[in-house]
Image (tube, rainbow, N blue to C red; front, side, top):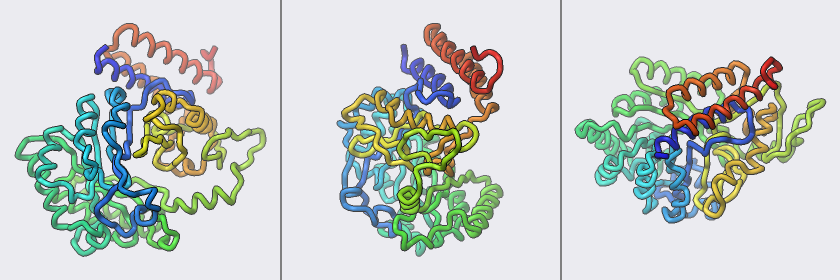
Length: 412
C-alpha cells in the first residue's frame, strides 16, 4: 500500500478512536510532540527554566540519529511539533528533523524566541516547506518585551518576522504559517489588544494567548488566570481581533503546578462515590462525574522527551516508556495509558484532567455524530477493499458497544 493509503486508513481508525468507546486505540498516533532542545540562549525571568535544576534543563538535545526510530510513523502524522524547554533552532540537527518529517509527508511545526530567524534560516525553512512557526511575542513594545524576554531584542525579532513574511509574499509561498505566541501575566495582560494589532500589522496568521505557568509560589500574584482582569482584556482583544479580521485564540493552562502537587499529596486519591471503585491509574482519580469522557491527546498524541521518555501529555508527566528502546505500539497501548483512558471513559477524572481544555464529554449525541462521521469519511476515502472491510468491521463493533452503553436495541 502507498503512504497515502496507509495514512487514509489510519485517519479513519483515528476517527473511531475519538468516539472514546474503547480504552485501546485502533490507530497509530497522528500527532507527535518532540522535545528536541533543552538549551536556550535567552533568560526570560519567569520561564520555568529559571527555576528548574540543571538536570531538568541543561543544554541537552535530541539527536536525529536517536529520533530516526520514529521516522516510519511520521507518515501517519497530521501534526509533528518540534519543541522543547528551550530554543529548538539551537539543536544542530533542527533542519534534519524538519526534513525527516516533511519527507514522510507530515506537518512540521515549531516555536522560537525569534532571534534565530536569520535570513539564512528563513530561506531554508521555505525550501523545506516548514508548515508552522510560532514566535514568542509577549509585548507590543521594546521596553516591556525586553523585560519579559530578557536577552531577545524587540527590533531584531520584529525585523526577522517582517523579513520572513515579506519573503513569503515575494516568493508566493503559503508556508510557513506564522503565529504569535503570547504568555499572559499581570505584566502584559493589558497589552493584549495591542498585541492583536501588532499581529495584524506584521501579517501573522494567528495570535495565541495562554496563561503563565508559575513555577515559583512567590510569583503567584503574577498570574491572571481566571481573574476579572483577564476576562476584561481577553474580551477587548477578541473585539479587536474581530474588527481587524485577525485570528485569535486563548488556550488556558494550569497556572500553578506546585498547587496541584500539594493538593495531590494532602488529599485522598479520589472522591468516594457509593458503588464506584476508582480505577488505579497515574495520576490517581480525583473526581467521579456522571457520563463518559475522552481526550484527543490521550487518544492519538505521542509526547517524547529529549531522552526518549514518553509522557502522557503536556499536563501529566507520568513516564510511559522509552521509545528509543521500546516499540511505539507497546507504549501507545501500554497498561498505564490504557488505565487512564479507561478511567475517563467511566467518568473518573484525574486531577489534571478536571479543568483541562482538551477534555471531551462523550455524550450520546457526540458519539453518534462521530460514528456517522466515520461512515461519511469511509464513503469517500478511496480505501482498498481489505482496508475498507477492516474499518467497517470495527465500525460495526463500535456501534454495538455504543448501543449497549446507551441501552437501546442493536447492541447484541
